[in-house]
Image (cartoon, rainbow, N blue to C red):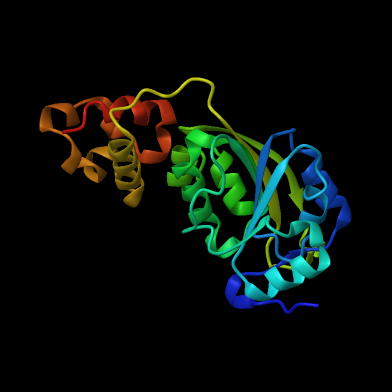
Length: 248
């Protein structure tokens, strides 16, 4: 068997119904990547998918050995490494699935954003609070950097909640499964670097009005616009994108 490592934020899915429910949300694709297979709760189903080039990335050496021993079909499909730094595992479009380690789930999202041009969809389990933040719309108190940056490039669908008792060991929080699909039409923006800077700067001081939070990014004449009377969480993704064109 294997040991559970708190340092890696390991909470392994043990509820077969939830595993099957997640797999049922996957649409047929030619290439599929699982992030953090752990004990193989999803992997045992994914490796059986017909006509799918399946690969998985696992950081923990002990889990890699366990998975290869338990599921021989994984031979040649399992990449030992850190998802945050491995090279893109496929050429061309692919989908991503995973019960993502909660301690690096935000970084995993940013990695997915880096690869967004090749990602067909993502189905992932997050801490419920993070999943809600990703799916949140403007005007909501949990709406923030993650919400805007993800929704600028992906349509977010909150699929279902997962109870703490579905895991070993049970985490102290509930979980949520979401699906990301690329937006149908690309959102016009000055540039991704400018857009990211604007959003991060705006939410860095979210209690302040936009005028005070982002004053270093705009000329004084632009800052006189009434839009800057608002706070960051009041602006839609579209408004942030439009505003990027007015940056210095």
